[in-house]
Length: 353
Image 1: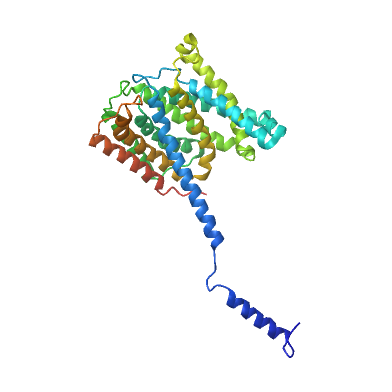
Image 2: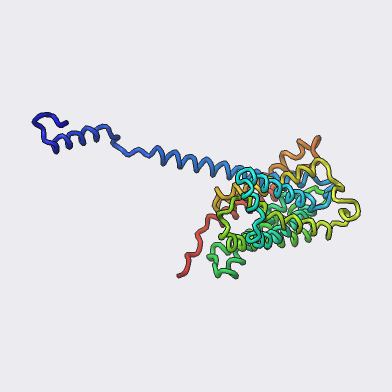
């Protein structure tokens, strides 16, 4: 009901002015701020988990060594990891999707694609354990940065995607830095560095990079499949490939049994593999390639700090041996870390049309 003597248009204008007075002078973006803060917190947590997993996984494998050697079948933790992941994936599928969800884990159409990629991944895990058997965690993590150079070469060959001159210079600097670290590393490990370890690491990096390219190319059709179903399908062929490689190359497993040499430390190694796998599938979705590469570089520092500052203080109850601090080695680690970060932040070559 309009006031007596007042035109509807006048009342509407007055009402509009009154309502405008109640509005803030500046627009409020509380929802946007909350969403941004939530995404930033999620990214920070994912980044922290990524660094922790990438750091402590090699450390745990180092701790499982006896007199500088792995006393168990090198790939047996990978076999156990695959079996556990299959059980976890199928259990989650049954829990969230019922019988239909469980059937999805065994759908033969995606299973063929996942299995082909899983075979290559299994070879990569096997090579990782082989390399860790002949070198320390810090050396392994540093040599793992060769993936930047290998990825650049693969992308150049397969996709014609070239690097800038600055990127190539940084990649060569990383390669030289890794070589210098290996030559100057004078750790007190009984195993020491062996050249065959470098071969294992490079082969593992090549397989991992190929897997990443293949997964990006062939798994897009199944991106709507729940992550637990994807893991269950991947780990099926992964399990049998890891078991085959173990029986083929680990003579002590063939002669003394699968569990020969296992103790509490080996169980922790298997758990570490499970955590690394699931964090890779779940956490990395929140991180872009820049944060992933920086996280890998930071993991080098964490492992080095553990070896120099922490290992000796916990050697009374953990079978680890601390390394002496040498300024040359420390500077080399810092150079490699900062060079990796520089490559990550370097401008890329614009795409040619």
